[in-house]
Length: 276
Image 1 (tube, rainbow, N blue to C red):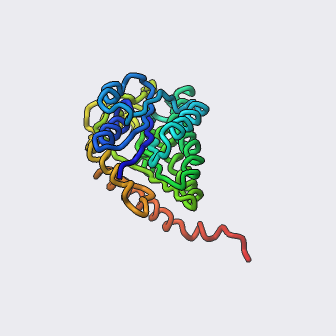
Image 2: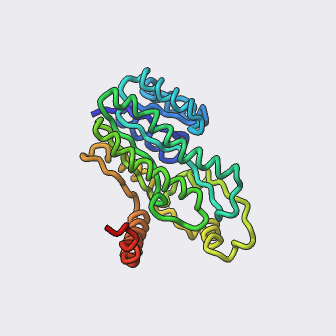
Image 3: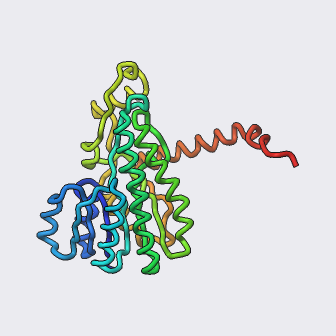
């Protein structure tokens, strides 16, 4: 079955790969991006099956307008992929206020705005799917990625609630959680100005691992993008879809650790209710 997809952040990384794969398979794509000419090659090849619009997801009014226009011009949109984002790296103390705001506005507020803009149209057409690209970093945390994790944990909480709210309307949302992946995403990382005091700490260790290549990028972006596409055919839709060995291992270890911590302090936890 041929589908129409709306995807943000299509100039590179998962967004570009998804767009290429979907067009090659005969689907139609509404692609948004910040670099106006980044998809000119695909537009020349696929013509009207590729609808392109520039969009900065930090502009909430523009998100609403572009989404509305895509539905109006294309009719039914079957799948919305919230993909736009980047990583701000640095220990929490090192981060600049303006960089913090930009990270939150892009990864968290931008994703929330896209989902909210799409929901009325998906309800009106009787349902649809949303893929929210999160990260293994939506359930685990590395030093030096504190703000990035804040946005990913934040969007996971939002989706966890909203997916329950919109299920009666035939709308399903999947959180996609890739592990470290060989895409152009790494090239878009914004690094805070390092403080010497953090050099010999876990944050500094992660920085050094990234710089030396010891922080392995084991995920295959082509396989991960195909898994995202294939997930749309799974019923019921997955609430979360971890991608890659790293993602599986890291998330599994983190969940077991949190459960063990919960059980460890169970007596204290249960002692704090009102006495009846």
